Length: 518
Picture 1 (spheres, rainbow, N blue to C red):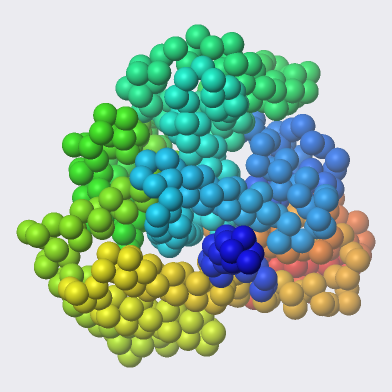
Picture 2: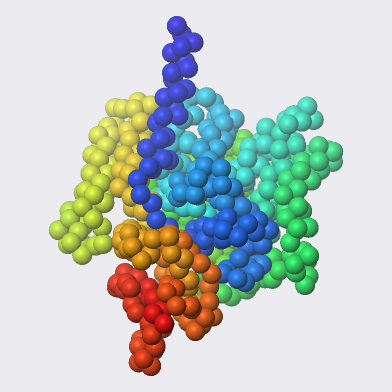
């Protein structure tokens, strides 16, 4: 009987994450970066080219084919639908939550271990990217596995974890290439303590195993290229290292991390500081690792929020430490209770009323999205307002979790983080229902892809086009009765060309669906 109860307990721990991870409603992509990868995955299946990443009929050699391959393989196995496209990200997200749970057990104990993955799943940055079909969560999961395997290595007897620590490096390279050097450099102080690891044959065997996907891919693609693929990847890394559109000031992460790690930012910062004075082994991973990583990234020219996903599990553990420290502090507990139970709920309620009366009608959200958003915010504020000074540590942990848990659950099920191009999807559903479009291949006039806006639109339009044909350099190459997406119809119209607009709409602008009549 006891064993059955325990099994149900573990099953409940799995079920509790379902509203935060799984969404079964209609989905739509954003253009960058998930739409770009999803479109490349579509071409893999359409053209049977599993080797070279494509952009229409051109090679894209600034990245590996790792994520595109995973999306295409998932759709090949489970069906060509959007749910399958998100499966690689979803699987990595679930695994990352599990590894976070195991890290909590390793650093602290089994008690409250479920809290850390719950905190992680309700942080804005992780929640956002766990519902994007990009490689960022997959890469971050691999880094977290690497950290976990390193922590688990106590002696030469831990052969599996020594092997695993080698494997994650190669797999991460297949996802993010040279950026894998950042977490490796950040782990150097801890690696110095365990320097014997680098002399283990199992580590090098694991390293080789991890690089097998990349080596196999590079040997497959090189016959099509003028030089080895590694040089093209290095060129991309050099672009990211120098000034570009993603270049930000050196202080970028000082505000960006607190903003994207909401609502747990302050607790995570306090916990990181606390762990500096903790045990020798703990501080190298929980404090030095994220601090060094953020420092390296701050020096690097390109700075984006998702670069910090790789330390989100560690920041989550620090959040738990920060909450525990404040609860046990005679000096700060009163401030902690007052801030969380009064100031934050008041701010949330004020934001809720401001949105309802001033911004609700001018937003692009539909009734469902507005309703779920406001209900989620209401329950968040209500939950934290129930925190009392007399509550036990367990009660405070549960109350703190309930608010963000309900908010993120409602946000996910509203579609705001899954149906991100809802209006465009709805227009394309209508286009797909037109008799002239059904079972008819549609080409794309590549001359219209001349700026970021038109590129963003055509990526999403192409993914929702039932039968996508090839890109063409000119509409002159269209045959009679063929369809195409173009931005050049006004020029054609003025010159009396024999083209007819089948569909146009402000949401799809500047793209129009045209038919060549003769």
